[in-house]
Image (cartoon, rainbow, N blue to C red; front, side, top):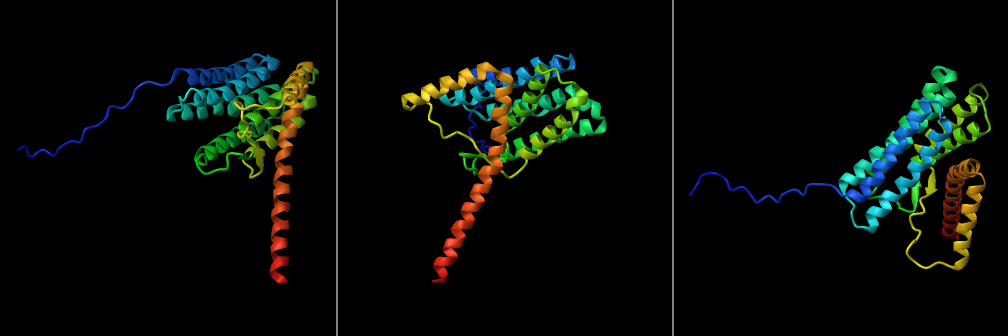
Length: 257
């Protein structure tokens, strides 16, 4: 008998990655990178639209992976890195090139605050995937924060607002979007929506009306919509706090009698 210890059979590691969901992730990454390049060339409307395109693609890659049963650890990591570029770096640089650069040091500090907040938001989300309530997000999701910043640039470009006029509001909104991402405010995730089940007819009509509303003025409607979503976080959190206080008050009252 040999004195060498027996080596247990090792199963070969599967090589390769799933193509379909990662194609959408790559497209989202490309859209985010294109937004930066477009902003550097002064094409701010195209840059803002590219961020929204990245949002759509980012929403599709996960759903495609779940529908085709092609989820993987690689896909999750790749998606997170793509989000950092498309929703962390790109919106901050677009806003900086558009208006924040006129504020000097304050401008790039606001852009960095947004970028760092997006990185922290994504890291926190990745570490809480298995334990967090899927119905809610903790902090403003990075795609929504990116939509606020990009929507502001899009609207400002359409109205011909100059950097000197819009620099301070851009500073405030960019910084606030970053801080909301790392806040403890709760936001609806809408992950409990069932896209496969049957729905009443009027809901389809509502969807059609929403598409028509967006088509009338995409920049203003999308910007306003995501601003309202950002405001929903403080409202939802305040409602939950009041509800918990009311429950505790009733328990104290019932315990005292």
